Amino acid sequence: MADYLTLKEVLESKISARESEMSLIDNLCRSYFLFHSQPTDKVCLFFHGFTAGPYQFIPMAQDLYKQGYNVIVPLLPGHGIAGKWGPSNPPPLTDNPRLYLKFGLQWLKIAKRFGAQVIVGGLSGGGTLATWLAMEKADDIHRAILFAPYFSASSKVIDLFVKHVDTYFEWEKLMGPSYPGFELAALRAVLRIADYNFKRVKQAPIAPIFMVSSESDRAVNNFDHQRFFDAALEQQPYCWYHSFSRVLDIPHTMMTEAEGNRYTSLLTVMAKANINSNLTWHEVEEIAYRMSKRRTFKSVVAELGWGDKVSRDMPAMMTLVDKWSIAVKRELQYRQRLQQQ
Image (cartoon, rainbow, N blue to C red; front, top):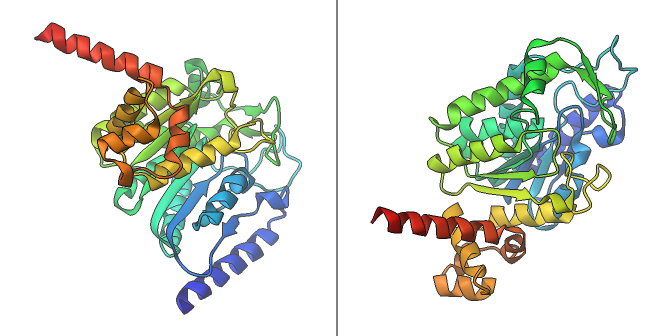
């Protein structure tokens, strides 16, 4: 216990002192820690999005802390620094992907000191880093929750542009205390990690991932999310996938209400359902299929004898699952088996 409290105090004081010397855009860009007085069963390590800051995970972090988790949201390298940034003076974002990978490994090592089971997660570029950790350190990670990870842009033309053109890109609409723009070489560093992730997912063990997308996301390619999930599921049956309907109009910057998501509470409910349940994706689909027959969640779980496998947030999670699509897929599979016989 003494070692834990010492580590907690040293970490908080050192990071605070270092970031005080950096002249940050806003205090919301500071690394964000929520620690209990002793190690917890679960500790969450979250990585914010490209050009943004730890503020993106504050709402979720506070809720998970109340649930008894320790939470760590570090400021990514080169991010959050105040300055008169623009095309002639771009923000100090690295173009070296190895810097992000080293950063992720360092913080995973720290997180393991604060909880028995580590949950990693991230939004956009932070999700790309969390995905890499889910494969690189699969045995050390309990769950990886990937919010709209940047694997590719919404357009292949944009991907080619990012890969081969050196220029400055400016955000059309600035959300939160973020950089107003960036050099494409900096985004290319994240894309290189994403390319590596895709090459490795079919060959390497992977921790259980929960891929979260939105049909209203205009920044990234949701098809690649589905493609990565399908490949991961072949390696790891406890992987989950969810895509928010276009009706909800949830944007790429989905973690806070200030950045455009009116339904941030849904993200936390889904995260808790995933973290605290012990269901394969096939089992999630089985529950959804039976519920599509006008059965209640409670009756289905009781019938299957899976009461000890589901968390108290799972019923809310199942209201969001596209049960109709799962039922249609099941019926098609059933017909195909009949034809083969």
